[in-house]
Image (cartoon, rainbow over all chains, first blue to last red; front, side):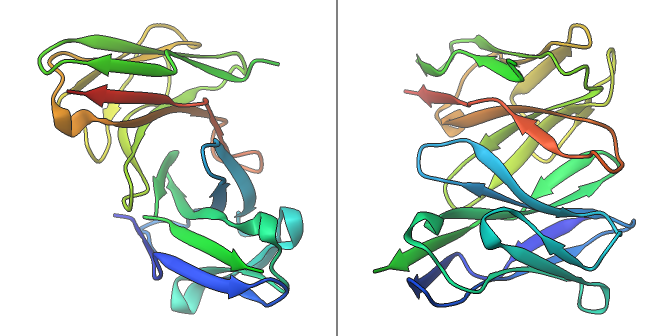
Length: 111
Length: 114
């Protein structure tokens, strides 16, 4: 069985400060893990994915995520937030070709 | 490249009416999916198809039926729409598990059931 828990429904940061969006997962298999972003009234865009090649994954727009098997976590980080990062972020686990989404974290970036 | 195309973009139904959401992909993907997106709940998997001729229930299949007509097309049918089915629906497709595994999404259908 699989599940994805995004620990914060809303995160607010100031522009130029670090971003941390938290995700925990459970899976019966060796999962693939993803982060997707959805800007207001837009579709979903892949930020990055983990498929066991390396535990630290670099994505687009300066985002990174670290896979920690012992903690079953896949947290998303960015060193310095930009106004354009304001969006909703989804952690996703893939198991046997099915993709399961977390409930989402809305990131607000203050000037 | 068209990618994943879903129609219609918007639809308003009355309770009890039926409709079919259409989805097609031109990337030769085996797997296709239907999701619904509701505020605070992320995207929830309605149905999934691993290949032509096969379908499988997801997290929230009640009130929906699907058809995998061929490798390209995967339709979602609401036989008797209910207000609880007001949502944004996304079709998606993917390559199979491996280095190139990722979801490709359609642009979404905003459905309101009155």
